[in-house]
Image (cartoon, rainbow, N blue to C red):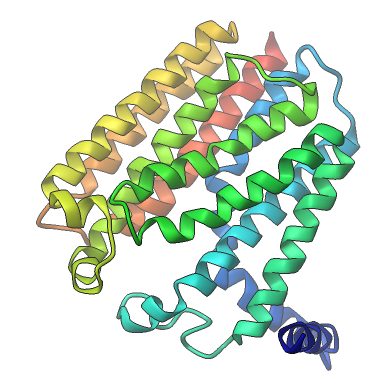
Length: 307
């Protein structure tokens, strides 16, 4: 009861911003906490599923709108929950100690309120997309939240993260078609392996910290050289799935050009990160993967538009 009271006070504090500048400042802090800009990693995959599904199922503005809201709600809830669960470790890690909760920019109660509201947004948006989506929204939230604990007991937490995020295109497909198709799993697997591959690259930065704190990751378990090799193999699967999609969805030249560009981007990503030189991890992690997602969406959109 006391915790609920604190959460309500945090919500009232958020809504009672004394000025527009203060409100914008608060929103910015929350956005930084959940790395809102990283939404671009998975959102284009979900929108790609929507475009592919629209070739046989009519789209409405409401469907697209609530799919976007569901994506924002789900990711915000999952990231906020992760920041809450990992706050203690983040405070000890020099790379993450200035994140919003350990730095004192956001209270835990405020973060709890944010996660609750984001979860409600996701469930509400799912309900607006139909009964099937509404029912599935609850186990999906559980799966998303569970990721935050996987690094406590398995080095393959990166694969679980990829799996959790790979639900996005599946969910978007169900929202449009109210069914599943074997073909859409190719896009889901591509997203799974892409996320897992670059999350392994990102985790290389915390290899020693993870060992000291008893946390699990591929780099701390296998060593950085083997971790980079595994990341490359996963991205090889990503590329193969993109190629197979051209057959499964009968996509043409515009899409294949996009796939070729994605292949080049994946090669560049792995050329930037070396076992003895991790200074370009941020470029590989954020910039290249952002471009990759947008190129995929553009390729599918153009191909469907001109066909």
